[in-house]
Image (cartoon, rainbow, N blue to C red; front, side):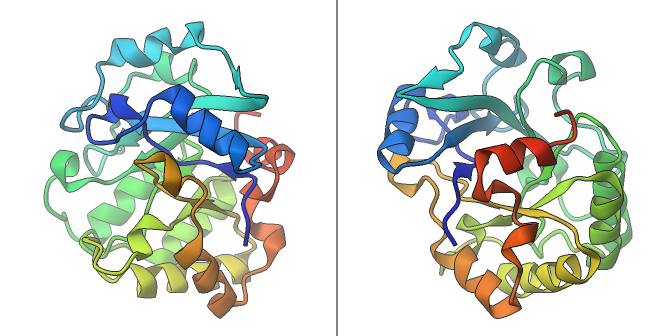
Length: 238
């Protein structure tokens, strides 16, 4: 399945990615994407930018090489209370918000119940629009509860192509994402396909996520980023 907007990409501002905003946007335009989202890591990630970086994004053009660019953030979920690493007032200024669990910030798994509680509290926030890579089995989660809350709140669940690459460090991602997709299909909950690109040539890569959607016989109607307008209409704040 080809996406029109990549909702999860990183630039050199994340500290461990390899291209600038212009390089990422240029590649997206050359690939024929309708838009691109830049979602650099929040400040609690090792090497991540200070919160002033996100506050100052208001000065950036919202179009490069003929395509819209959404300047967002991949927030770090810090605890089971749903704390993230940017303040509420700042999130209101950001174009797109992804919230993810990373061991470097969240710590070790707090158990299935508390991990699920963290996601549920995050999804009830109006300023959190996408849950990033909820497939990571190192942080076990109740997928029925996750999908039910996603449907209730209009939060988009990510199918992360990077998680599914052979030799990846996340645990049981394929099985977990497949279970999640089957539940989303049954509930009518929407997903996005995110590349999690840390280099320009990986933008909009759905090599593995597309295969997973085929196996789940997942309907295209429930994929939010197959067009830019569909994505915008699916985002909570829009």
